[in-house]
Image 1 (cartoon, rainbow, N blue to C red):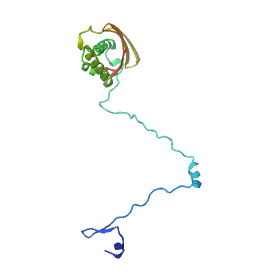
Image 2 (image 1 turned 180 degrees about the vertical axis):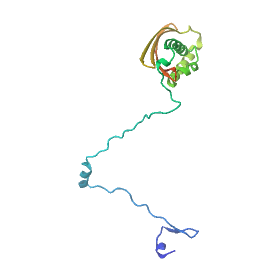
Image 3 (image 1 turned 45 degrees about the horizontal axis):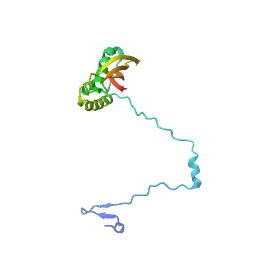
Length: 180
């Protein structure tokens, strides 16, 4: 070992005979700015604006839902009548919610399944009259979108059912539902 290296406490020699050196990390903290120099940094005219970020990039996914025009979809009135009757039966506990999974979005399905579970607990005491859809009204606010409402008689009470159907992948899909 050389005389200069022998004086350095961080120089080591391995068992194989090759020396390696351990060096301290230099201090990289920025220096302090005095009050006299601070005004130089405050008067700079350039400030960076917010970055333009696209949080919803265009999805080029083969498995994503594809919107469908109304002209390419089946006639909405018969479908609305059937889906309204099915929703009412699920809510009243007369039909399993799994029968609607193909025709509803995941959020709508979870809402209907939860309501079906609650009503099935309530119905254990005895049978009731089936719920019936009396009247349906349709509105088409945009191409491929149907908003419908139905008057329902359920267990001796008149109730309202409102929902939104969107044309996706060549079929109607229930994306919103409200039961009154």
